[in-house]
Image (cartoon, rainbow over all chains, first blue to last red; front, top):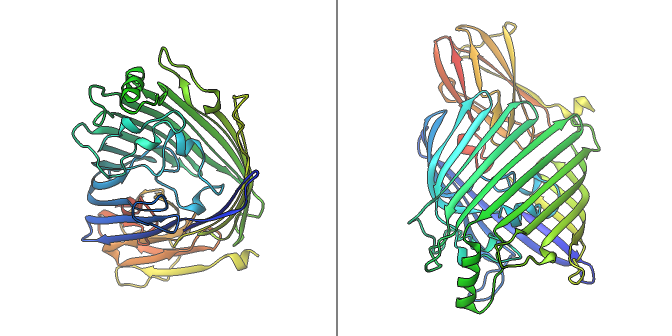
Length: 337
Length: 115
């Protein structure tokens, strides 16, 4: 559950019950298990109106064969980055997810798919899936590939994408991960079938009261110039999609209270740099307002490990001298059980 | 404060036999979405082991189906749970999280190898 109050400069405080999530799981046997997540966003869903959404975020079966080899099939979370698979509000600092984890690696990113997953021993584990494609007809300059997620609706599996993640968690308090996604995204763009490739690596480390997490992600979109021209012919608007998107962040956090205490208070700061037009195809110019950075600083207070009360202030910057970014204050309440 | 923060439970699960002697080994296992660390534990046949289970985040479960063990691991900062285990037969014993903890819960598992 994720309840926010957001305030951008010059605007009033806006409350939002951002996410209400129901989890269902079932063990058919010791070797066949089901997991699902059904989410209601923004508290209200009405037909044909722009309000909330009800979304099936996950629904898959696991067939457990060996510790190192298991089969997973259904609606899956793509195994990219830190947040997408671990998005419960108490598991990250800040009221909103990092911008890089929404604009460069969209989250929550789920697709139909099947694949393998397992524990290789010595702290290594992996996930490797074939998943339904992105839809390049909805890519744009500001949000990159984010709007191209089908989320299981009108998805295409004719030309499935491949995605994999390798994680190392063999040293206590240290987790390192690297992820890759590659696949064609042209099932809705006649004559153009651009390939989207995302490479990412991330790490999380804790030492005494200090936590550190960071992530770097780069996205490549092939045939971006042709895609832009094709979409402009169809819609009359040039989406100005970049051929490379890039983002990274670094977040140190300090636990104000000793770790063994029942309560936890975490002071954090996060610097993010993200550009959805890091490289443009020839003949297209980048817009400086999409070369962005943010400082997010705030406090997460946890009266219980599964309950987080969050406050942060967001300083947004971009390279434009015309389009001014808006700073914001966020207050959030997140819990899960 | 430490006493307040520590909830300590001891479960004896020795394939039906209680075992009061001092354990031959203590093995600390840390649970965190969605892994146990360590996830592979090698024991000697007949060795009495005490698992000391803590969580680095939410509450988890620790279940060894073949031994009838299933205990709750309290969330971070709420203490630990101790489980005694003796494997009288050689082989591999799976253990798993028995408390739904998120997207990777189904595969939050590990293996005890008894030699």
